[in-house]
Every structure is written in structure tokens, then in C-alpha cells.
Amino acid sequence: MLEHAYHEVKLRGKNQTKRRLVIEFEEGYDLLSVFLESEVTNFYEPIRKELLAVLNGEKEDGAFSGNHCRLSVMGDLSILWDDTAEDEIGNWCQLDSSDLLELVEEWKEKNDAFRQKQKEIEEKERVE
Image (cartoon, rainbow, N blue to C red):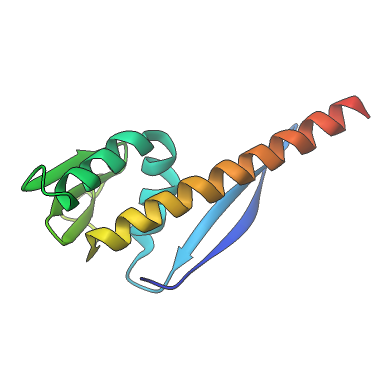
């Protein structure tokens, strides 16, 4: 699996600061970070379902198109494309489908735990 690291970032607005969890990969896999942070955060179940269907042999191939990225699952290989590129090709990367499924599930677990922790902190700050 690709080496990766999680970091917390602060987004400051006029009246508030929000914290977000981000994941970083080695050079050439920036789009994978975008895919996990955006698409998986918003569309976890359909993405997981597509990956599982192909990996379990229920489907020959699978696809998903979200707000920013497009995913093609072709057996053991998955390819991500940047759907917002002006040249209609844009940034892309490929990786093993089972590694992608593992990353999708790991991201979901870590991001859910991070969000829960942030919610508890915000509730505690409101009470004080």
C-alpha cells in the first residue's frame, strides 16, 4: 500500500475556525488525497460498493463519478481521473483496487473518529 500521513488543518473564516483531517501521499498521488477527502467523505457507500462488487467478482468492472474525481475499477487495477481538468484529461493515478478499498475504509474510519472528536470539543466549548 502507498505510504501516507494524516494531518489536521485549520481553516479560518471571519467568525470561526474549522478543523479538517487531510491525508497526504507521495508525489504523483495528490489526486488520491482529493478523492478520499472529497468523494469518499461524501459518497462512501457507493464507492465501497463498486470496489467490492468488482473485487468479489460480482461485476467485471465498476465506475463512480463524483464532484471532482472519476473512478474506474477494472479488476485488480483502479484508475482515478480529475474530472475538473480543462484539458479533459487532467491529473490521474492508478493503484491496486484492493489497496484502494483498504484506503477508502481506513479514511472513513479515521475521518469519522476525527469528526466525532471535533464535535465533542465544540460541545464542551459551548457548555463552558
